[in-house]
Length: 506
Image (cartoon, rainbow, N blue to C red):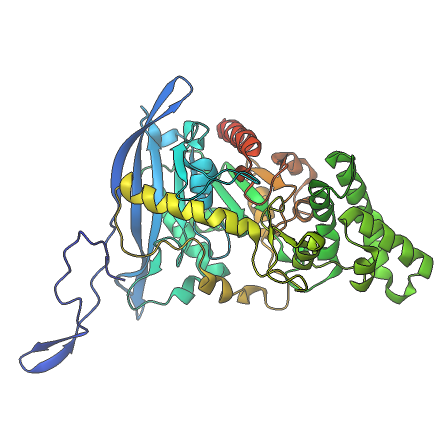
């Protein structure tokens, strides 16, 4: 795609697909795309420190090496990737840690981690019960990870301003392998151009971005010999089968149960019991009795089934009649629709602390996720202002927060007949690099990537027992984007900074 910045003069012959020369019609080639990044200078106050840094944002062109008949014929542009990098002024930047961050979807831009948690500026939008009205606010983020690490935020193809080049196919990147290779190439390119091969390097992914991060850790070290110091998995889902996204198997129903219990607790379904008590009971049932109950099928006695119905209803806050009619298997979006149906409310999937009115009181599933409704507007307004007014980057392309087209056509052809699972890649990376540290952040009220499922996957990593000590776990009483909850944001910021410091040490 040609440069669409409005302050750039149009390149001659780009607008027309054909030109006339000596009376003959000749097909024009697309204009050669070029990097169009812009750099600006800023200062962030962190405690008593004045952190001076350079922000660079825009699009970087990725190219393929081209060979014809075994001969190298040059480089072919293939995609323009939007990214934003923050580099702190330092006497010796080449060994300062750098974190490469992205969100998930698949089809999501990096705006959530960028303006919600890690970057030097953040969205101010309020929280459950006290949301701020549009047009929202931006503020300095004194807890930014920039205090301990440089940052590079990456928008995969079809998200943010990232696009395939003119004449190229976006579908080449809408899939497991194409995505890993393109994001990995941007990381290699940035690291090389900025002389950061000797810096401690980290990946930070959220949601599907955790699956991407796990696969990238192995890809970078195998393809480029780039060994990482750490991987941060925020709202982790390495194995889609663990949450029932391969087939509606019993494993997924079991792994959602503790999350259902946490959500029911937040909405007052457990009386005066503490969250810790409720989760302990739900986890114990999920560990032993629930898998056994579901495995029995018609062999389950009437008494055993009645006991299971009673327990599941108590833990989830649903009626015994609903649990019975669900055949003891509660699908997650139906749960979010059913839990507060008597109040005319649906519960958020991304963050189940949020609620919103149901369009229909008899709908099987709600028409929209009230937590996404609450979050998307503030982030869109904040980014579209910030990128132009403060980062001084101008592009008439829409900044795509979440590409449903990319999500819907995402290809998992590499996993035909089995669940999508990047846990083996993470395990391989850890076996090859025993210094690789992993930080996992869980939200108890995250209904998209349930915490118990993520724990189950990590517990089964094929690594030596000693390497499990390289994995650390952090829990927050919030949702998928736990940083929407201010106490969780402050705690998580401190946890991640501490992780980077420790994992960067020799």
